Amino acid sequence: MIEKKQFYINGEWVDPIEGRDYDVINPTTEEPCAVISLGGQADTDAAVAAAKAALPGWMATPVADRITLLENLLAVYMDRGEDLAQAMSVAMGAPIDMSRSAQVGSGSYHIKNFITAAKDFAWEHPFEDGTPGARISHEAVGVCALITPWNWPMNQVTLKVAAAAVAGNTMVLKPSEESPLDAMVFAELMHEAGFPAGVFNLVNGDGVGVGSQLTAHPDVDMVSFTGSTRAGKLISKSAADTLKRVHLELGGKGANLIFADADEKAVKRGVLHMMQNTGQSCNAPSRMMVEASAYDRVVEEAAQVAAKVTVGPADSEGRHIGPVVNETQWSKIQGLIQSGIDEGARLVAGGVGRPDGLNKGFYVRPTIFADVTPEMTIANEEIFGPVLSIMKFETEEEAVQIANDTPYGLTNYVQSTDGARRNRLARQLRSGMVEMNGMSRGNGAPFGGMKMSGNGREGGAHGIMDFVEIKSISGWADD
Image (cartoon, rainbow, N blue to C red; front, side, top):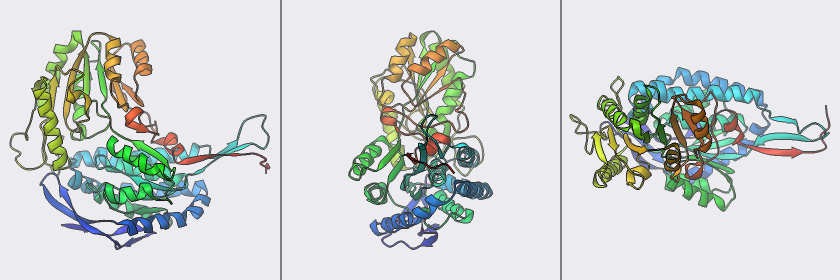
């Protein structure tokens, strides 16, 4: 049993003031794998005070020096990759090979992109020609509360911490209590990289405790949150009293539009993308929408692909998917699968219950429904598990209408060899991101949504922009 009962505040590991024990459950075994402390108001106050005290000095630190510290962080991050991988695998159930590659790799990828973006970022510059003495400065927002989820831990921690730090902000990180171990390793990395005391602080806690305390805290200037839409609404209401900036990266119900002229790998690509990370991704292509003339073929192929997706323990090597994070999520997913059956969708792969041979652990059968219609529950709710809904459309216009008929707007996907069609759809689909023909976003491209998928953007220069204030200066004296 791992014991991690300290918080990282003002450059030191300190005992909680009001902490209470919390068991972290290994979703593979359903047994506790660690005991952490969840903080109280006094712990939150101490972390915020440390960040506030460190803010003036950190804001005044030259950008070049802040970039150097990010480069130091990247080096120690790479050195401790195995520690991070093991921590994520045991606590949130990512299969160890996937944890080593995608989970750890996402963090190093983002840090690298922030280093590149920060070097090119126009931190201070003349306003425009013909306005002598006018200048624009980008400076830190202030003390930032960073609240991260359990599903892609290092992805979200690095997207927030690296951007906030290089922009001159100080911060308090509250990772999910479901996967806190990797964040505590990350705190060690920030210390080893040489970030000054108080710039980065970590307090473990749950949403109703430390999370709520941070969002309402009068000395917190910004909240950056990734998680559920329900929690995002509560955070927005809480933060309104102090008019702090709020960045939200929330849920999704992505449509994957597959036309009859899609490339031969499009269906397999869509199914495997849905199953990645056991379906626990906000940008998962969970609604596969298929042109009528290709529908029967696609359904058959999708079922065949899903049948080959294997499920197994997170600590076993291989290309399988692992358990979902906890019993609450497992039960929710089972209920939604049952609702698909009850509402008349055609089950072509998977179904309720655990996969054969796995009677312990929060495992879900890779599941595909065909003949899903827009009014069905599984077509509307974010399932956050390995469950794919296949729907039929007759025309391009109908595809757009169904795809956009959701309160979410994070990522949509298009599979077609017709370039003009792809361009039309990219403009018409109401989402913060549109990915087509399996092409991922470019290095440092912005990640984020619209509608009830949140606001703001993460990654690269756009991610840095979310953590700066824009100051307009007049009467500037040229050097």
